[in-house]
Image 1 (spheres, helix red, strand yellow):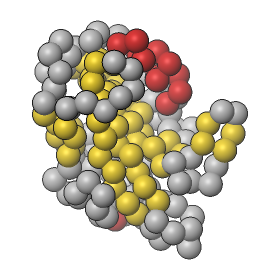
Image 2 (cartoon, helix red, strand yellow):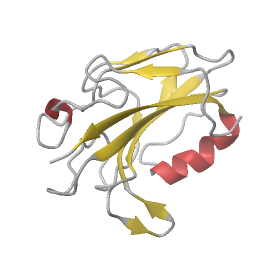
Image 3 (cartoon, helix red, strand yellow):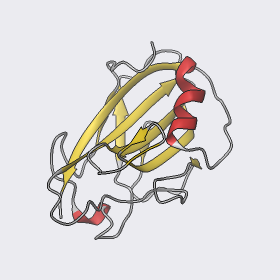
Image 4 (cartoon, helix red, strand yellow):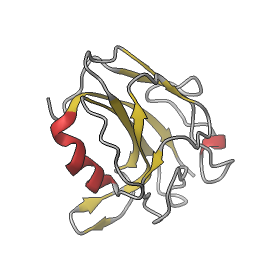
Length: 157
């Protein structure tokens, strides 16, 4: 399947797709991850990965662009939600070179930024080590992606 959108559905009880991300979930607020829920899981799903990426961030370096806010993986296939501020599962490196969630905080006056929360359904439990970057994770899981979808939130300062 690769990285094509599927019937997998990702949502958040705190903002709608295309809606404003409440400041609680940003670097200006409590800086905690939002609660996420999903349904229409593809048959054969054994694990999940979640990513938050801001392609509007004015950063480009070594075949990457934007800013990575969250890389989370080794989520069991039986899980259908993440609670607010979750500390469960395996954390990868965000764009601040730290592990875990780093809330939106675009440059002041830079306009609206779009934050893509991506959910990947995988046909294998990969038991990956902590600290992977977004690009390391994507390269590793690509052969095992059987479904994916996204939730887009917006934020500006």
